[in-house]
Length: 282
Length: 176
Image 1 (cartoon, rainbow over the protein chains, first blue to last red):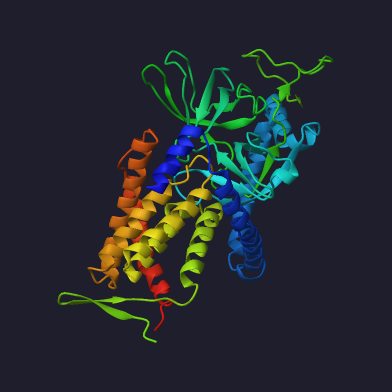
Image 2: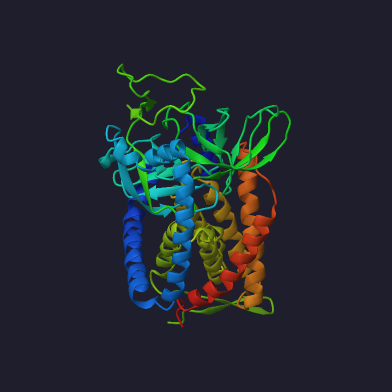
């Protein structure tokens, strides 16, 4: 009965029981941190000293992978513009030194299947606040939903209540992308008349004012016609099921793109601007 | 001191078990910690609900509805606290309170020591637990939620299977 009242109070007052959460997370996060480091230590010992019986097989597999990567590299060189863009994204941290960001280690996940969250080992003391964007070099991860003194919780893109302003990289069609509590995301409002291709990249549009434009969100892997919008399923670009370290964008102000050679202050780009240069400014 | 005693109900004899000091607290905290930590390294581990299994085990063993209810409530609220603020405090709390009560009530009427009985009961409790969560979401939180899917069936089977082995492990915490 008490808990029903607790639920009612939370809904009515938009309260989220912060005190109880602070105590619980404060008590548990040191153990999670210790567990995470301990697990890495044991895993390293295991990998480097005990689990060497598959080394020959691994070497062979790695050689095959190197061959495949050489081929892939040659293809990428043929697509210079696209390669530049990917490179700038992969080097996001270095090439955007003016954007305050911090790397954080993932020390925990949601304690139940009702939500898709992760816990980071950095919090308010490191400048992390609610609603800050979280990414990896591969793509968007989610946003900070709660920040404690030494830890913070991140709502993953795959959570039912999560979403990000996105657009299709080729056609520049804008539509939010959200989670469904499953590994795949859904692009929600693309009209049936618009053309979408399988494998097309989905990138951030910057319209949510959390993430800068042109960060990878994922790839279209399934398209079905619906009424009135297409049902588009998107595979996240970042591996959300195996996150170890992430980057938190330490800004609550919209991160805006600046055109190359533009000497004036950063401006919000007009929707639909094709391939803006990957320069980010606060 | 005799730490396991018979609860006589008519002609049947049901044994009530006691545990080593701090065993329930340590097992509960470990379950929560493992639950919130393993999915980082093994994504499929998110299918397990260790706090629920611990609630069921101690409910079935202690066979005291008040203890089962309170333990379920405490575990559920802690799980809510660790699930991020998109999960309101009380969602898991309500579900585990009811499951704790049901487990201890059933435990007082049936012999739940056999692995087959434990498998069947855990399967049923898991489905009931998810049903209560869906009911809470739909009625109290006005959130759309599907009642049944194959994912639920698979998760219930997996949890029931893990419960059989986990309960054997937890049996070692009993005072002999």
